[in-house]
Image 1 (cartoon, rainbow, N blue to C red):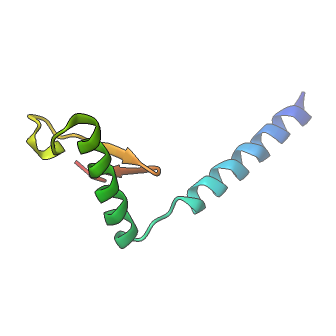
Image 2: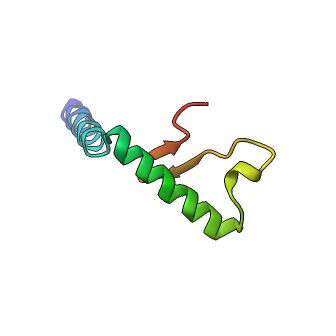
Image 3: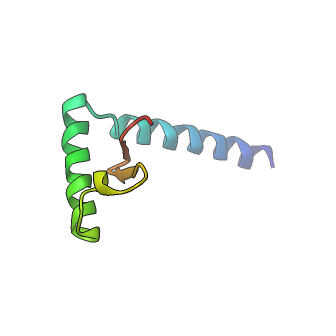
Length: 69
């Protein structure tokens, strides 16, 4: 049983390290990603997210837009 647990922990550590490193974006990349997310939102709902009564948080390519509320 301990071999299974050890293998699982190693896998989870590797998985979390690889996903964190691959999704890091610079500020310029985040702006482009958020712009793409806004365009996708407008295509789906037919209006800008700024026209909603609440703050719309969009997620695209593992980035939240806006990143902070």
